[in-house]
Image 1: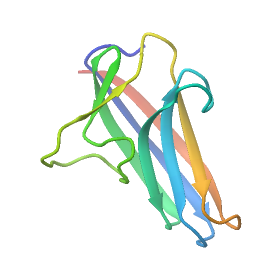
Image 2: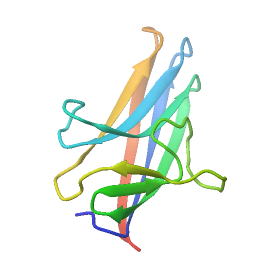
Image 3: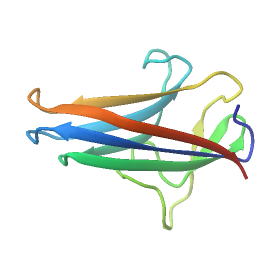
Length: 125
């Protein structure tokens, strides 16, 4: 169960086969275990590389507000560091069951992509 002031951290490893086109990886939260309904996009990464190690760190500022340095559409492998922009707040209701859904989009049918590992951690601040 996630609650106010919880730290939400995940990282995942992805391996691609074939460099014929760009691969786009998206991570959503949703109340179903697929993309039906109203999924919330919380992370995006797009590149033509073959190996990916990607992480996301966010904090719950309320039971329905997940705050992160990067938005869900920002193309980045990590959200550490500093900048001059404000935090992004994702409206996610953590009082109900939420699923993490990872999706892949391939620009070339000759390529393949595999989710090798996914790690999710919740800790109290």
